[in-house]
Length: 408
Image (tube, rainbow, N blue to C red; front, side):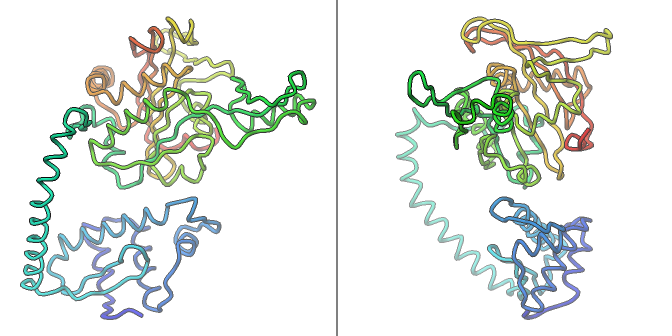
């Protein structure tokens, strides 16, 4: 049961400028207050059902409720920093639970005394640790990687870096399956470039029923060798802005996560899984034979782009970078290539300080601004994935309407 309950406090917070005008967060706060009044503290599944209408909800699969509670606590904290800074009674939702508390604010003198005491302890701790840190830093200065606090090209990433929604990086991985070879009397792990998902493997078996007894899918997949470089680039970018992120491989990506995160997808386009639906609403089309098609309205001509050459020597590849709205006021960033060469270079154009600045300028020259959402087609050429040259072929502003995730 709530102690020191004041009926007017929740409504006062909801009506404040700091809280904003979100009906969802207002309903969530009033719901938690009502539950706390009766001592019936809800679980995540109950909140998901009562507030968001999700009859089936698995907290282990989705962080939706935790994200909303994180943002709700932040809104309440903003209120007490501004309009409610002189309120005698404070509404709190302690971390780790969903019970609302009403707490009397301590007198300023007591608060200040505690503040000075805590500050003294912090200063002593900093003084004691500074010597250790200086010695450690001196020893490590030749090898340490220090992310820059200034991020050139940050406007390209601002929606993800400055958002409270958790960030998730999804890496396109390669599907493999097990096959028994009767001639060699042994099992082999097979990577078929025409089979890139469990669904395509199922179609393959349906078309070749004689393979049913000889093959089976596996519980693991293979990462593309450039995956380490992709994670390194994104780690530098995120750490420079004090932003954490999680990592998934596409074969283990749960579609439920699509609504709960800002997402960065990197990989060959054929490994994009459900994100391949993007092409249903793009000006670019991806054909079944790994060709990107584009109808150029300026010259009234359909253009086709396919990788040329040997990936281990001189070759030309094509890559796509797209930033689009997600289905739940989140952001989806995609970096893909017909081969991994263009996937890597597409990402590098957005994470390398110099290249990202040049890209921002190209957008301003072509579109008059750096739009919130866009899509870019790159031509990438070079030798053995090194010494790569990049050329922007087509650049478009994308509508803010999140219809990408609607069936066409």
